[in-house]
Every structure is written in C-alpha cells, then in structure tokens.
Image (tube, rainbow, N blue to C red; front, side):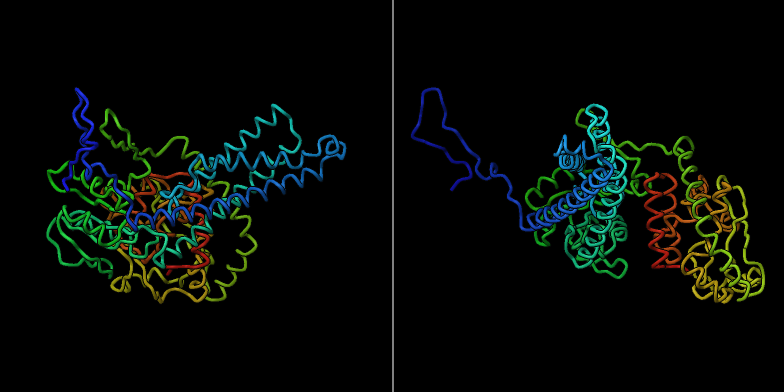
Length: 509
C-alpha cells in the first residue's frame, strides 16, 4: 500500500480535490519501553515525595494547633468549635499547593544539587507569608501558633525528609534503578570528560550504557576502570539509543559545520528518548551564573560575570561570625581535655600556628591543635620525595611525624576546630577554598590564583568532595567553581555535608 492514499474516493464534490493523507509522516511517535519505564519511576518517586510531604505538613500543623488549644481560653473554642480544624487544614492546603506550584518534585532537580531544597524553602516562605496576611485580615485564632511553630519545625522536617529520600534514591541508583539510561555523543576527548564527570555509579542520575563517537577511537572506551561500548558516526545515535534502551542522550560536542545536528537528533529521538542534554565545559565553573534567554527564536546563553564583594559577602561574614562564635562556645569544655591529651602524648605546645595565604594573597597565622611532633617542620625536607599529595599539595598517607592523638584528631577533623578563632578574627571563613601554604601559592598559575579572591575556609568543596584522594585538577576545579558561584544555600549544604564527613571520614590523613 502506498504511503499516500485517498480518503473517501467516492466523494467527488465539484471544486474539491480528494483529500490526501501522508499516513507514515502523520503518525505521531509512540513512547518506547525505555521511555515508559523512565516515566513510571519518575511518577513513583514523585508519589513517594507527595505522601511524605503531606504527612509531615499535616502532623506539623496539627501539633501547632494542639499547642494553640492549650493556650486558648475555653470560651474561644466554645464560640468557634471548628477553630482547631479550620486553621491547620487551611495551612496544610496552602502549603501543599505551593510546594506543587514551585515544582519542588520535578524530576530534573531530584537527587542532586540544592535546587530541590531551595524550592521547598521558597514555597514554605510564601505559604506562611500568605498566612501572615490572612492573620492580619481575619485575625483567626491559631494562625500565630502556625507561624511561630509550624514554619520553623515544618521546613526543618521537609528538608530532612527530602534528604532522607535522596539517600534512598542514591542507594536505588547504585543498584541500577531510578536512573536515566544514557548515551553520550561527541568527539572522543569530550565524551571522556563527560564520562569521568558523571562517574559509573549512577549517583547523579545518569547510568551511561553506551557512547557514540564522532571521530576515531578504540572499539571500547575505558574511563576510570569502567568499559563503555562505542558506536561511530552521527547517524548511529538514534539506532544506538533504541538498541541500548536509552532514555537520555547527552551531547558532549556536535559535528563540525553541522549547526542543525541537535535539532535533527531531537526529531530522530521522538518516542525513543525523554530528553537531549547539552554538555558544555563552561558550565563546569559558571553553571549557576548561566541563563537561557530566547530572542526572536534564537537561544542566547547569558553568563553573568562573577563579583567578589557587595551585600552577599556581608551576609557571608554575618554567617561566619554567628557559626564561629557558637562553635567556640560549644567546644570550649572539650578544648582543655584535647590540649592535655596532646601534651601527654608528645611534650610541647597544644596549639600549632602556621603561615597560610588568605584573601588577596595576604598572609595570616592559622591556628590548629598540634597533631605532629614538635620537630615536624625540620623533618619535612627528608619526606618530600614520598609525597602522596596532588600537585603542589604535600600529604603523606602514613606520615611518621603524626602523633597517636594527632591521628585521631585528623581522622575526625578535630585538629581544625581552633580555626574558628581565625574565622571570628576575619582571616578565614567557615566555608571556602582550602587555605594554602606560601610555597604552594608560589607555584600557582593565573587561573589557580583565583582561589585567593575570597577568604579560605575551614571546610569547603575540597573537604567534602574527597579531600586528599582528589587529583590536583579536580581540587582546583571544585575550588574555582565555589569561588565564582558562592551562595548562602551552598554554604549551608557544605556545612551539612562536613558534619557527615566528620562522622564517616574519607580521604583524611
């Protein structure tokens, strides 16, 4: 049968030609099994979050109303018996509605990054802003308790539950579930970069099942010990996606002199894959400062130039003072015990002061609990040949200069607690790049020197991203990304991850 057929050929009205239908071209693509599977697990995970959010919100609002009931005169309740139900119900409904409107359960933000937590916080803030207005307009009894109790308790409970679900999701992805089956397309070098960044555990949501190389490469790619199958040529992408049951295509680079490649690829993948993801190395550093703005159908990618002063850094300084003062006060009773243990283990001072380089290249004296023997500096030259550190960083996995108490302090990062004094003084920040030694800075090139544009931190992306196990290039990349894209939410996230790393240390030596 021809692809073009006449419809109702018996009807030949004067002045009308028979209607022609291009049947094959007119049939909309139907979703493949891979696409249906992805949509299924996304819906399932979204339902889990919906049930969890609703449960926590209702419980929080009911507890707030219970406290209000205890403080409310019986006359008020007798005059309005529905008061205990109406206010928490209205609060819960508004709260849940705004969590939905803010797309806080969108598939693109779950499992990684801080966007999910930001949307939860923004939705909660707006919900209680609406409640505050309702309190002013109607003066309902019980709303004040919702504002004072449900707001702080609820947002903590929601963020905690989202974190718990994220941990569960990571475990599922490590088992090969709840992740996107992905094919990476591009030239050999760019594909390797994407594979190395994503890793092979699927934790970031992408389980790479194959690659399509646009230039010459071996029959299989081996990246960090993982073998990835390879197909060749731009025309083989849709075929590879179908054969490998992939639902996501990451375009690491496009063929030379082929500006329509991505558009044609998206058309070819209709019904086979859910999305085409464009990878760009500029996003490695400038990601949060990038935005897409279409003008007359032409998509323009805007990259905002970073700033290293202004109101944001005043806010950062306020957070530093608050956290460092609280940490010093809370840790004061234990400081004396640690100091005595250090002295009994190896006679000498309990504290160690060392020159480090801070913001704008200014030197300062960093304070730590002493974890090495008193003559550690004198032994340094003899140990440099056995360096286990990356790049200019000197580290030894089994450093003979470290004392027995020092090993425990280093393992749990307790030797760095006195640095909160440096934060209070203004030499350091709670979160920032690792404070370098003057010798390290002398070996920096122009790009690495950008680490000195802001204050160094007690913790930072290096400390929570693998510490001494990281390569020099990876350490620099993490620090530069932080320097140029700092935010309060990012600082809070790193502080939280630091607490986890202290309990489960990795790469600390």
